[in-house]
Image (tube, rainbow, N blue to C red; front, side, top):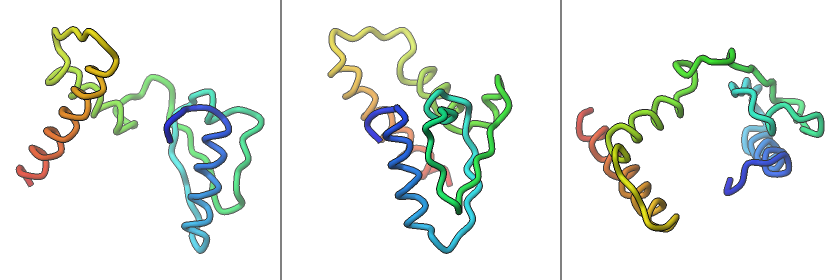
Length: 103
């Protein structure tokens, strides 16, 4: 989703529920505000499981961001947000290429 807010989270949950309508989904998440907001509409086939606070080892995306920061963004400055976006695109593609080549 392009934005992180409650409406986007509700759309995500609805689409996930419809795409996996014959499945029971246990969705592991951190406790970001849009994950725990009272207006969150939880479909019947989805159960939320919250990882404990301060446990980045249980959140795979935290490990990815840590590695990207260390390998691609360490000691770099950018003149614009567009440059950051382009560098992030390069970093993700390069990271994926290297990870797939290793396996």
